[in-house]
Image (cartoon, rainbow, N blue to C red):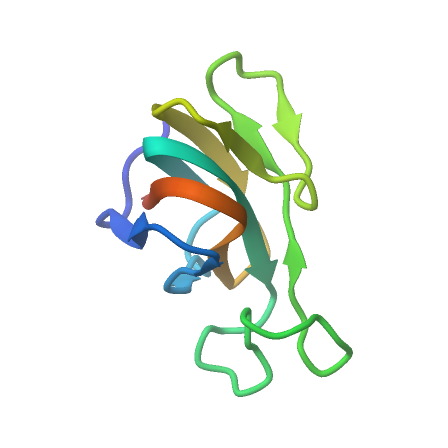
Length: 134
């Protein structure tokens, strides 16, 4: 049985614009539970970013383009609503005008840092909370 191994962490808090969250060290975990809450008629997309580098590494900057010297990528998340849908990293989680709470599992095995990026922002706000699990 999976047990919670760390305290929850807020990556995005009522983000109401295109932008980035606060990177999270996931080096001690295999999976991370994610709750994403869209509010105020959200019309936006949220994408999960991952890297093999530590969040303090000067060669990691989620806010700038991926490159040979900035190693990160958008990573897939598994939707827990049906337990079978995988949302590709480049696609992201879309909100289309309806407030909702969505829950996901992220396989962070071998990754050291994750973050979330709000893209295609039109309206609303989004909060992303991570729950480290084994």
